[in-house]
Image (tube, rainbow, N blue to C red):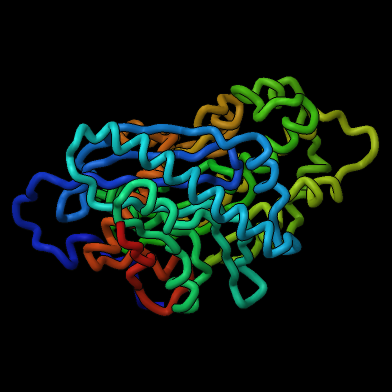
Length: 382
């Protein structure tokens, strides 16, 4: 495949950048722990100039539970209701950030929505997001860019991952090769190298299983600092059974989600008598090992740095295990480059909204498997 990810400067002048405009980015991830919203300033050449405000707005408990239950068997009427309710929730989140703009005009809102189904393989790839952009536009009066995956799917791609183009624009400057790892519900990897195309893929489960297991056995949304996992012992026999899942051995491009890596999938690998804290320790090791092996197998020899973002960056035990499995590599937060690790995805969809209006391709064919670069997203008038 010869198509590569286009850089923003490929379609814009590299002359002195004028003061950037404001953009809002919105996303609710696979962990369904709330709507992440970011208000950012982006220059006309696509450089992230500043992050002015960020918010995480919790979803009502019963709405979050309904999203957790949604999937391929959910009745159409229920999906339509969720689409509208989520659109209103995203609209409220965007309106909160309008206030933070202090009256300065906002160019557009980029909203990824809430993924309720994603199937990278077997072919054809399928992906469904909820969060009616019309309701966001009605709530804010702003143009809204949404449905970012659809055009990549139409070009033969898997519609994911979508972060690599933004990572390249935001974290790929200079001559250094580096890996960017997002520890969200699903762990995904972006590989940035000045010598080759930007690429990346989904590595496997991260918070989707760690949080789900914690909810079941602790009654809490997540295992704070990974303390519960640290109290357990890795069950190496269980770890090997989990790693026998064919997805881990499949070559990229590839993408996945909680449809594959669910608690039901985990339960199918468990044996009687396993302590819940040992399972949590083993799930942590599964994430650390699959990330480390993905970096080792696909990053270039010159890669010396792994930049981590997503909720997992706050899991001290997981980060310690990742560092232990990546000897010789510096494992650090994206904060080291001035990008808030909790809002990288929200900022990324603000950037993808900029790319849509600027006519810049937002996908990286080497990552998604698409035939060619494409401008992503549908535009809804404010």
